[in-house]
Length: 194
Image 1 (tube, rainbow, N blue to C red):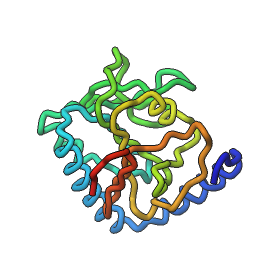
Image 2: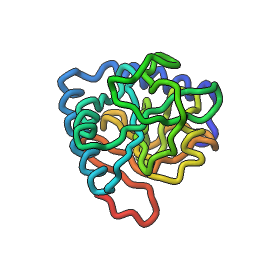
Image 3: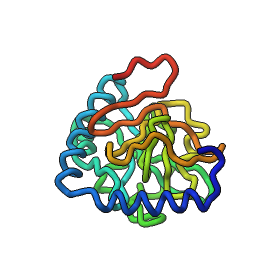
Image 4: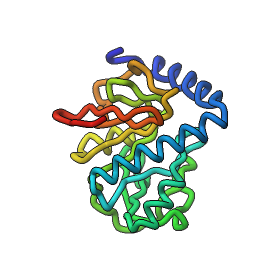
């Protein structure tokens, strides 16, 4: 669907929250383990040392296990921080133990100088499409951030929340990849990704 009204997105968000809340805990645990495996393989194959990560909101894919592995491996985790309403996210390096409560109830790195964006960003959302788009929460923070991002933007989702398409506006940014417990989809030109 092209150029949807805000009302259409609001209805989809409400339905997405209900669907996500209905996912059985056993499914979530098993799916998160599969997503961790797939993301670990992706990042290892990419050879990156810095990864843009996220602290999950309730119901989002929780990657705490993977973050712990990456910290032990010496990878730098860059966390998003809301500095200003209506501005792109700012990423800062931090260990999980250093995160503080921030905007919208999301755990963030403490204030400090921003880091350059890493080569690879993990992106959460409510729903994702098989065409590479996401339906977020409506604040536009990830779309503003991704609009100037030249690295790999990887959506992270349960397969149960992956749809043929989602409502989108012209300013919504297509992701380069989406990883679920079942598959990894690539939307980058010339990508050879399984």
